[in-house]
Length: 482
Ligand code: ARG
Image: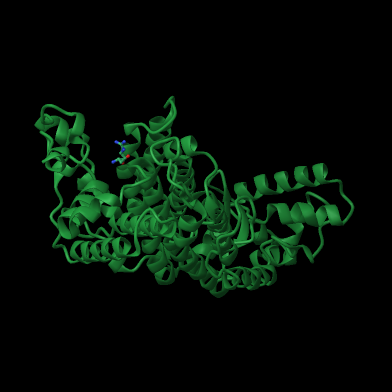
């Protein structure tokens, strides 16, 4: 009789023992997270299996109980993956839905699974496993985007492109060099993700609600089973820490900021006024009213979506701000931001991995644009310096030459030797070598410079960097051995 009474409560909740009335329907809906946190089910089941194995190892569960629990959880996993699992809002979240289904399936033994743990360390474990996996996937797509950039840079190493500062023609550059600038930015994003992963890859399991547990648990064992580098150090911190989510969101925001800059350039370059590149029709859409329009919607949307990801970072920072230790329900709000930002980043990177190989350069338009705007004026100044004139005086001479050329409606290279030499008698016939665009590129022949020879060297180094990426090992926090 007593046994029967013990597990009766008025609310049918797993935590209902001390409650005397059922939850308000609104409160039930308002506090539930299962509509979105069910996305974590694989990680929740992995975490539960590791926990149960550990409980059996330390003799809190028998081997037979462990077998029943693991089999039950695996059946639930396959039901969920086939879409046959009935999620219930009354059971609040992914954790209690699965635990309750387990008890329904295997009976009383299912109730032993939650021994020595809490949803607080459980959810922290799930999110860490999830973010670790997503970082790996994002790094894979990021590597594809970078490979596409390297191939593009190699093809266009000698293609002349107008380099801009202040969006005004500045100096000619190799278009391949420009593409490798994107490679560098994304490479830093990759390194930041790899570093962030080290702080993600620690096991909070065993911290229980906040203070640890009275059972003789083996936290090293669960950490090892789940592929974590080690257990976390402090139980209070472990259940409340979402720094790793915020750090990941910050890294993703910077990555999206880079993609937004890239997108802005693509949008400009496809416009008729620039006409530097062509994006194939399959990446563009039309206008419902203007029949002639071909709009670069994909880069435009990526530019827009960067704001959305940065918004999630700001949400997450504000979510953590001023929270007292340890776990607070506020943290349930981390998931929708996290999920949406991951989906957004992956879609945008995927779009880039497909789009980059399809971009076609309009080399004539690029070169024509580079030949306007006195892009080789610095080269003329450098020429005079090499002939003995101090740089400031050379700057003055070239300034006057440019002003004269503007009057003549000509470029510097269009002026005759007589016209040019009126500004300095150091100017000889060999000046025309430095006034050409190709000559200007070729002259910047040092590491990091735009000479095609250097661009090809950088391509070789970039390929080696990508070839050395062999996935992550579980390196210690703070090391770069991964
Ligand atoms: N759904 C909760 C979350 O996402 C799980 C942890 C709930 N813990 C608790 N003590 N209410 O944070």
